[in-house]
Image (cartoon, rainbow, N blue to C red; front, top):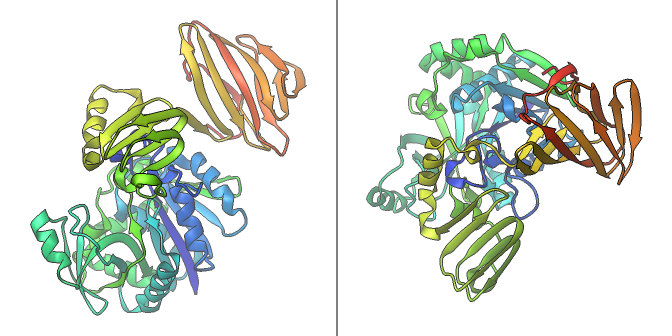
Length: 470
């Protein structure tokens, strides 16, 4: 019997701004334990089962950051990425992973555990039991979902009405009155969005209830473009096959239509981290119910949370306040107004503000860079190159570059010359000079790059030879 882990990694997380952005979505947010949400999801699952493969469905622009996150489990499980050109909700993502697995192993007798990458689960032992229970009953259902025993009348989640592992009905997110009614009845559970299923049963049920969608996604998975990146098999979905796929959740596509859905009720310390107060509640409390993550000081404050990514943040005399100080944006809000962060996000989106999409740290196949300073005719970057990685052989028409190594050893190709630079050594590269930066070492290479010129856009790159086929 094959066991497949399927991780769904996407969603902007607009109510988690400024920590979450389009190009840095919430699965990459670091929790107080030092691991990101997606890393915690992966590690948690691998402690429960010996999976034959982990299939992650995500946006193609997030591939290299995702590969970096997965480096913590090197050699523990085969990792595969199915890469969407744009999001089409959970049904296409889950179905594409199921069809890929069935075709790869030529076997419908496969079991898949599907987990969103952005959930927190604090009770790992109860979660392990719930997963094992789900696998035990999955042969009897087309799909098994995990129903969270509610601890409050939440209006932020859908509900499942159940009886003895059978789903009776799914309920939309209720108003406050109906939510109170639901939690007074032990047969109502929160809909977690986590699933377990036998692939053969799942596909058979899809043929009954959404045959057209299944056929369309089957065509998509028959036309994947495959690349091997850092020992990860990466399958890119071609846009021309994907653009007409329905944008639909698995709930609407199948769960609400099928009469053969199972549920495992569980109390596992679950939260989907949809808003900022849900995130800050993961931070251990200090005196007066205050929470600090990063570089911060609180005096005479109560029930106040500060997340400070870099610089020192200080607060005095505050009550019920959340402060998020990222590298390029500061947000201050009442802790009861977390849901309204989307109002700020939407306003910034109308203004085409760069802070909506872009995180200050930009990820590339070889590492990342962060713009330290920028003004007319100059830009200063902090560049990180992972061990055994290299940038493309390239040149720039409009700018010169001056590199200063601050950590590690750099192999630099400049024209016909190859130069080795160590810490505190530098090199100048004039416009239109072919050059390449290489880290042949086993430790991270870091350097400061100073660009000078009339135009400093990222599109001023002529790639002569690119190991990443961009």
